[in-house]
Length: 339
Image (cartoon, rainbow, N blue to C red; front, side, top):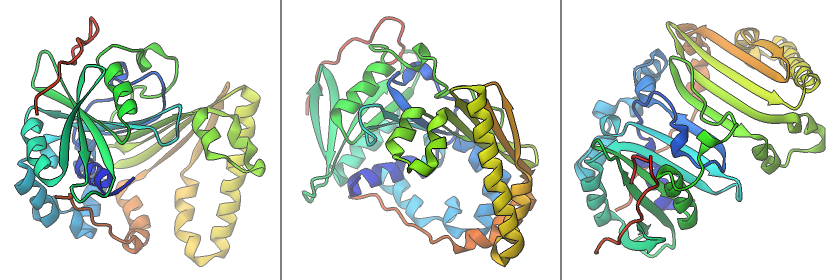
C-alpha cells in the first residue's frame, strides 16, 4: 500500500470505539479472514490505561497529531468512529475491504478531506464511488463508498485499494449478494464479553502463507479464531482452531505443547527469556473432537509488569494525514437497511 492508503488506515485506526460485534449479514461470503476492533472496550481497558502511562503518544487529550486531525477534518476519531472491520477476499491475498462504522458527520469530514487528497466521483454498476488519489500524482489510489442506514443517522464508509473489491463489499452490505450469514465459517462469530479485538481466518490463509514442508502440521488447520480482551481485573487471549479430525487436533495440540516445553526450557537457561516463563505457564490447552482451544489469562497489572521491558523497546511510529454530480445508485435488495 502507498502513502494515501496508509493515511486512510491511520485515520480509521487512530481510535475505534464501540460495536458489540460483527454483523455477519454485512460482510461478503467470500471473506477468508477478518479483523474486528472494539476500541471502546480498548480505550476503557486497564491494559490501555497502563500503556498510556508509558507511551505519551497514546495520551489522546494532548496528542498534537490527533488535534491536527480534529482541526482539519472537523471530527474526533476517538468519539465519532464506532468501529472498524477489515476483511480479505479469496481471489487475492491483498484483496481487502475496510468498513468504518460512523455517523452522518462523516459526510462533512470527507468533503474536508477532499481538500487534502484529490477526489473524483465515478460510477460503477450504478454505484456512486469516490476515487481518492495523491494530488502530487504519486499513482496511489483508494476507493470509498458511504452507505446510509434507512432508519438512523448511521453510516458505514467502505474503503478498498481496488474498485472491484469495493463493489463486492458494497453488494454484500446492501444485501445484493451472499454474506457470511449465509455461510458456515467461523468468521465474525459472536465474541465473548470484554473482547477488544477478534481475528478469524479460514484454511485459505494458510495456503497463502506458503509454509515450509517442515511446518506441514499448520496445513491441518481448517479455521482459526483469536480473541483478546479483559475479564474483570484479568486480560485474556483465547484461540480456537478447527482441524479436519480429532486425530489432527490431538497432533496439533501435542506439537504446540512441545514448542511451549522447549521455550520453557530455553527460558530457564537464557536470562532474557525468564520473564516469558510466567506467561508460558499460564497457557491452558484442551481438545474436543476436531477442535483445539488455547486459553491465556493473567492479572492485568502482572501482565503489564511482565511486558514493561518489551514495550519500552518498541520503536514509535508516527502517521500523518496527507493534504461533481452524484450518479444514480442501485436500489438495495429487499430486506437490507443499507443503501
